[in-house]
Structure formats: C-alpha cells, structure tokens
Image 1 (cartoon, helix red, strand yellow):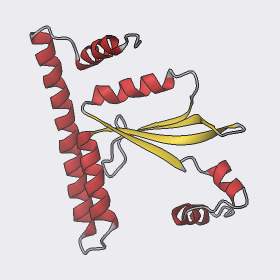
Image 2 (spheres, rainbow, N blue to C red):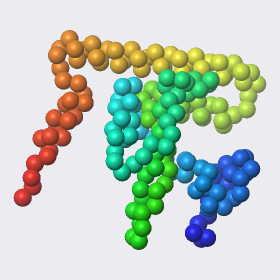
Image 3 (cartoon, helix red, strand yellow):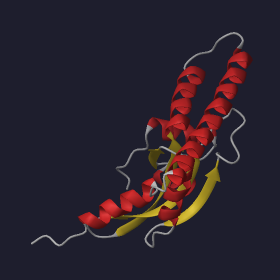
Image 4 (cartoon, one colour):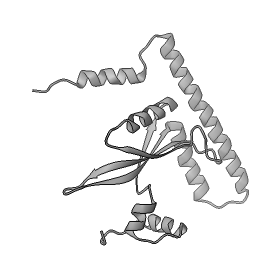
Length: 179
C-alpha cells in the first residue's frame, strides 16, 4: 500500500478539502477514484439502468444524486450513483466505491461542451456565458423529453414491442447451449 501514489487531481482534491494526502485518506474520503459513464438514448433508460444496477446482489448503493429531477444551478443533468463494488484480487476481495454517471446522449453533449467552454477559459462577460449555457441545458432537457414522448407514441400506435423488450428477446435467442 505504501507504494501506491495518488493521482495529481486526487492530491488537489484532498488539499482543497484540507485532508491528509495519504492512501488511507483517499480510501476514507473520496468516492470517485473509479468511475463509469453510461450514455443512453432516452431518459427512461437512465432509470432502468439504475434499477438494474441497484438490484444486483453483489453491489450496494451508497449514494444517489439525481441531477435530472433536480438539475444543478448551471443546468447540468445526470444521474450519479456511488456503488460499493467488489474488486477481486488474487488473495482477497476489496470493496471499492465507484461513481456511475448515467445520462442521455444530449446530456453528455451539453456536459462535454459546458466543461470545455467554462473551465478552459476566463472571459469578460462570464455571467452571460453561464446564462446562455443554462438556456441550452433547458432546451436540451425539453428535447430529451420530446424524443422520449415520440418514441413512446410510435411504439404505442404501431403496437410494437419496446426497445427493451426487443433487446431481451435477442438475448433470449442467444441463450442457447453451445456444444
């Protein structure tokens, strides 16, 4: 354990929080040392993925932050889950907190550009940029909702199986014994 060295961004985070810069401090105080971002098509997919993850018997939900139902002031939207995940070593199993961010393609697009625009530059009239970014986030959120409504209307009108039902059917067809 003494040979492990925290990443520079981890060190900065510990210092900002006035915490000791040690491996023990990282383990005890940070929950985003490992992370996964899942990007999907529709808002309802986000909650379905979260449901499937939280129903797993080998991982445990530690914290959920729903920035879709309650966006951050800047307009950021995403569902964040911090999960306790077992990591299997050759001689033991360690449980590690992993942050899982789940968002739509549109949310991911906005977050990527917002990060690039906001954090890489210091410009005059910064508040105007912040306000316009918030406006874009609101437009993107309405677009996500409209796309979901359109998909549901088409599936209902044509009495088609949902995308999830189609996926499960494909998986059932793959579930054959290989000799």
